[in-house]
Image (spheres, rainbow, N blue to C red):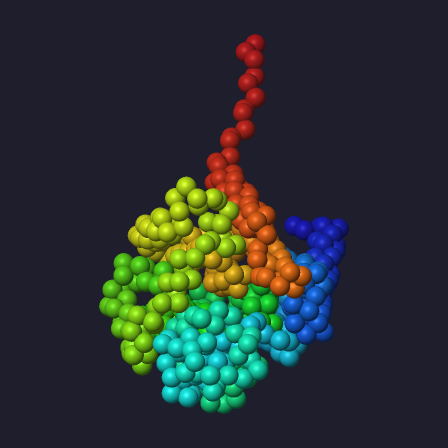
Length: 449
């Protein structure tokens, strides 16, 4: 029987807990709004790198508060309806729409215009004299103008559609923001299908590097992530043919999604073949470029390591080529082992994409979204720590503003991946302590009379 005093104390604790949760939710949203509003006021990340980094830290504090609420509160009633969280996530993405996107967006627009003019972007780099008549004010902002297209055929078809609608960097940015909104809707649907709260989708959608990647800089990866999210939903809903089609479209958007194929080959081979067929069909309209379809991809992947785990360690003993080959072989071996041992697709996907990111020669901060998208299915502290540490990526942008050359300080990847490693070690220690069986209390021995 519960005494009146005990009921009163319990009610007081619950009331205090509700007040703390409300405060954390309010403070978290305010800090995230301040983050995107500050960037919107700046007009671009490069306008003031230090101001952006300060706002990034404030946004991450807000993200931590909301993360704590979502992971701590067991009932959805305590944190409000999902539709309000979804509307808040959409609102955060609308605030910085007018911010200047990444210089990658100028390539997106260019490759769309090239196709609209009847040329193959895989066969003609931006500085090709045959394309001189297409040059405009945005042409000079294209990075690596001597490289033909590197993005996959589905990305190219999207660029073509954007060029037909309105050839502007803000058109493609808006598209990528829309795809990002759909990603969190699909993630919420996946969580519902697993019998979990849809609120977990904010572990991905409110993470500052995700907001910076798509709402602020408008990178194309949101399209790839949308296809991947639908593939996850299809696996959860046991619609494997749809999962195969979506995986094929994701691979044809960015070829890195090949790392998900081993799981399909192990458990649903027909759908894996379907994915390969779909991806191959997407490449057919561009095969007139021959080997040029993959030439830029090979050039980028064979370059010197930058801001990656490989960049932390000296590659002089093996050489750049040997290092890349060794990393590729190690990746293949790990993927095969993961496909054999990880039966759950979300578990495999998180491990596979994380392994890929750790073994890639070049890492940009928006690549982290490939791993963060799996957080709603199982929060991993190491990747959240890496997301915070990605603030150091923008040191290279600061160098470009000051000396005119985009270059990463040697210490930046050491700090980022060093803190990641420490967080991973902490996770292992905590997990082992949690599995350790409790020792029974020693019974007190009563001396014989």
